Image 1 (cartoon, rainbow, N blue to C red):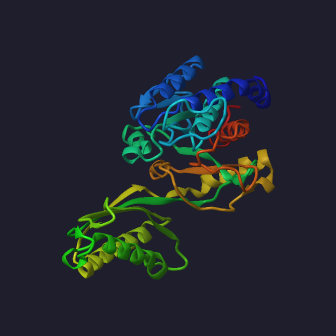
Image 2: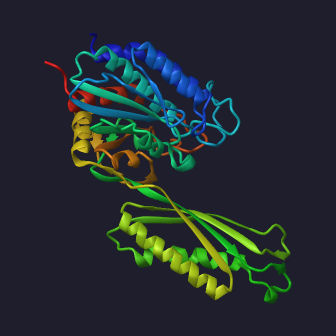
Image 3: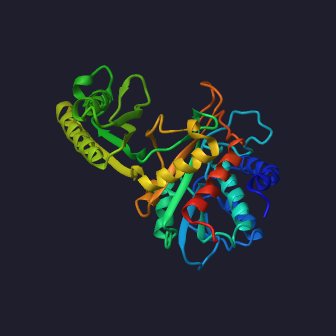
Length: 391
C-alpha cells in the first residue's frame, strides 16, 4: 500500500473538485438527496455497502461483522438557508441556499478518509463506521437525533468529528475534554394585549412596551442569577409587533436563544425566564406565552477520546499547533446527541488567515480546501490509534 501522503496527494485534486461541486449545489436539512446519492455512489466504488439513514443520511461500515473495536467518524452534509455573496466560480447556483458552514468540506474530507481506509481494510483490526449526517443546522431538531433513533450507533464504541473554524489560525487543532460546545434552547415569547389608536394608549394594553420591558428584564437573568464561575448566553434576536406607525398592536413576538454549558444552569435560567414572564405580564396587564424548546444538549468530549485527538494531532501538526485555547464555544452542535450515547470527541481545525477571514455563517465564507489533507490524516491516525492494526 502506498504511504498515506502519497494517497492523499493522489486523491486531493478529485476531492477538491467534488467539494466544489457540492458547494455549487447545496441542500437544506433532510433535503440532501443529491448529496446522499453522490456519497453513496462514491462509497460503492470503494467496496462499501452504504445504507440510507435518517431519510437523507448515509452510514457505511469498513469491515462489517469483524470483531474488535468499532470507531465511527461523522461528517455533516446540509447547507444554510442564506444567499452566497462570493464571486467564486463554484458559487451556489441555488437561490437562498449556500454552504456557509463548510459541511461540503466535511463531507469531502470523510470521503477521502473512506478511500484511504478502503486501501487499509485488511490491516484494520476492527471496524470503522462512516456516518454522513443530514440536518445538523437544526431542522426538525437535527439529524443526529434521528440517526441515533435509527440505530446508527449500534455496535459503535467511540465517535469522532471535526469542524473547520476560521476564528482559529490555519493549521492549529483545538480540542479539550469536557464541554466543548453549548446546549441551545430556542426562545419564543408571544405577547397578547389590546390594540388601539396610538393617540389613546390608555385604552390599550400595549404589547410593545411589555416586550421592551421583557427584553430588559431578561438581560438580568445571567448577570444576576448565574454564578460567575458558570457561563451562559441569553440573546433576544427579533422583536416583531405592529404594521402602522399610529396603531398600537394587539400582539408582539420576541425570539431568541439560550446557550449554556451545564444542564443544571440551563434549568435554572429557564425557571427564571418563566418567572419574569409572569411578572412582566402582571405588571403590564398583558398575557405572555413563553415557548422554550431544548434543541441540542451540551456537547461533552470524553476525556480519553479528547486525549486521543490531542495525541494524534500533536504527532501530525506538532505540539505547538494543538491547543485548548478558545474553548468551549457558545455555538451549538447536535453531535452532542452522539456523545450522550457513546464516548467521543469533537475538535476544530483552524482555517483563519487573519482577523478579517469570514467566519462560519457569513455570506462570504468558503471552506478552506487546505484542511482536506489535514482532516484526512487526523481521521486515519485516529482509527489506527483507537481501533488498531493487525500484526
